Length: 564
Ligand SMILES: [Zn+2]
Image (cartoon, rainbow, N blue to C red):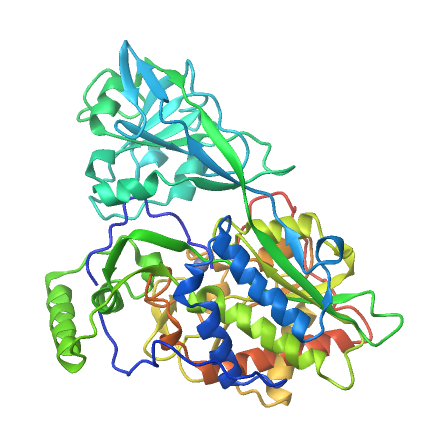
């Protein structure tokens, strides 16, 4: 699942936890069977989230290695390739973008240097708008821009001060970008407070979509020092009045781009009905995750700390420990160390066992099961493992814009992202009014299941009940206007925007979400097997209907921003 918003200065303190004894760190693989089993899922997930795959980030060789595993399994189970040119792969033209190290901003004769004084990043596809000659405007504190007139910042470089909420306050970057949609650039102050190791991470290349997509220009995003802000404004930041104009800027910025490897894996089990086999029920997951970093942290400390302070992991990225929480984390860590002497380990790889290793291996298990059926479903089943989800749903957007089967032949899409957790110990999300929700043995969140097709949403309930899957559905995350915005945060939305009915299945968020602690030893394999079996059953029911599931709700504009 992609992050709600980038937490700009999210600095993880040492970390925490667990009441239960986790599974072993390594697991010897065993041959998989055609059935969907906890043992098969475990075998697959220990392979797929192993450290050797280095976090599977889209645009890296590790994403290629991960997708090679999926394709090899698809071939072994006899799936029909449905990617580019008769292969299992659909290449997705990502670009790796870096800023040239000689780039400068010149203001009133003073030269601001890239990395020392400012750090530019493009956050959206398409070329960055030129800053050259742009006037500078002070937009006020980053979390207080609503009071300004709507047209402030048009064509300007908008300088934003630190959050009024203080350090550690969460910055809704999406909101800031939307607020200054017409700006040439948006500059957030406080770069000098970012510790060197994080500043290093911010210098890493961005991965953006190349090709025919993303030709609309967008505001350039910069992080700048407080001293640079004073140069730009021609006055100290303290005491600057929101809306005040500063100097104008001459920009000498060069971005360098190179192609970066990324690919979807696409395969089909052909349907058995002569007339209906040209229609598809799509089942998907995302094959990528976040990669790795160069600032190792103590694994158990981080895990215990997050569990107490940030129960929703990166979604709680701005939360700091209260003294009582810190004391609790310290005592739990001491107890853990005493019970596990000599096991301290550093960790720097985002393994993404749940996100979305769980979905990826579940789709493999579902494919293996369906391909082994003596009686195949009437419609075909289309399996797509998307790349670049964590980079902004890039692979699914590419697939649905450039589908390898006719787009109108996809009757529904069932998306699986993070189905390996969701027990009572996990805070799986909050209701729209902010009440924490915990999972349980039968817990499953459904998102979007009636947003296009009431019939599809009803069918999911019927299959769960009549075929005795016994899962308990939580729809609270799917509320209109829910601040977590989950409906817009995974690959199903790329399909839904074209009016294809979707169901998003997830066991929800947890304290290891987007952390190096999202590892296979913390996964609930029996729970995951039940969810995967339900989804397989639903796919077969949709595939065998004598009609396409009926779309009875309004279709969105495929190019508009997603709204939950
Ligand atoms: Zn994610």
